[in-house]
Image 1: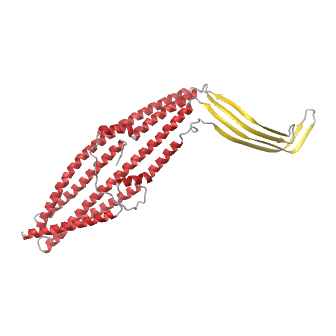
Image 2 (image 1 turned 90 degrees about the vertical axis):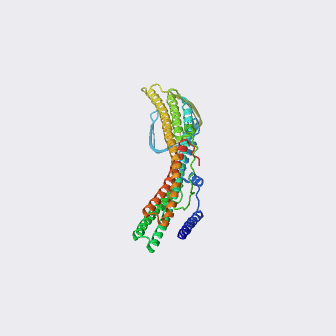
Image 3 (image 1 turned 135 degrees about the horizontal axis):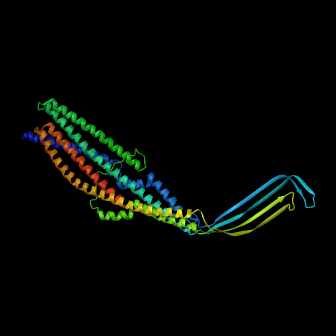
Length: 445
């Protein structure tokens, strides 16, 4: 009875020591910079290179939406021409006399302002303007798709880092238990209650667990580098993440399907491309109409000739006119162009339907995965609780000497595996949740 109380006391102090180590480790972690998920997403939205490039492209598309780009406004140009020559000239007059002059200098100068304005082109300019507005929407949709993809990647990597750290904690616990087992085996060997083989086996198992711990630490460091790269900051920036994975288990398939049909960037892009194809047909049909333009200008001119009837001349004045042209026959190319434009509209419609079907298929598959992972989280949580109870009982029996090292190691492995599987199930459920929200175009935190 006294021995049992002594062993219980030793176990208490051993657990207290482990708890103190973990507490100190936690305080050290909190002393480092804590990067929350909200902060990570905010930094990515500000710094990520893909997002910044996409924003610039969207800004270019927005800048292109103007009347001048569509050809609705007149063009005004300034003109200047200045020509000079040195010639040996000979002129025969009407009376038969001849006038000659060597190195005669001649010059002419003209300058002015001209305006050209296409006032009618078969309504093509209005279709071009509408197309520019659709291209602006397309740029905004592409930017939104980039933002969704990047935020999804940041969230995935953030929770993956949490998973790796939880696995690191489980592996660290396994090392502590193996170290306790080795210490116990050494003490038992010293008093003659255990063979040398038990000490050697415990040493090998401790070395194995330590190797796994070092590898797990490397995985954590690599995951931090990847996350820093996504945030477009120094990859050596130290930080810590939170230690919990909270899964939203209230997602409904019907609601997600409704949101995806309205907000999914791929579906929106296909819809905008269909609109652009229809506007392109209008531009092609505009070639059947005449093109009417106005031209006007105000010009100054001056010329000098050393040999001739007029040595100097000057002029200035307004010019104006109307131009009109119409395509009468171009070898039936107009008909072919229109037919091709109609085929492009059909292709755009098919692409739109294909995208909707593809997104619906992805959504249904992701939702089934999400439901399965929610069930796995419950199952693995139950397994984790059972494995912990088994580990506690086995550890107590091992201290009493009523459990073989092989049985102890098996219980230890089951406990570690249960922790890893539970953490993995949580992460997989979270990843499925993120995929569903991304497909629905409604990715929140």
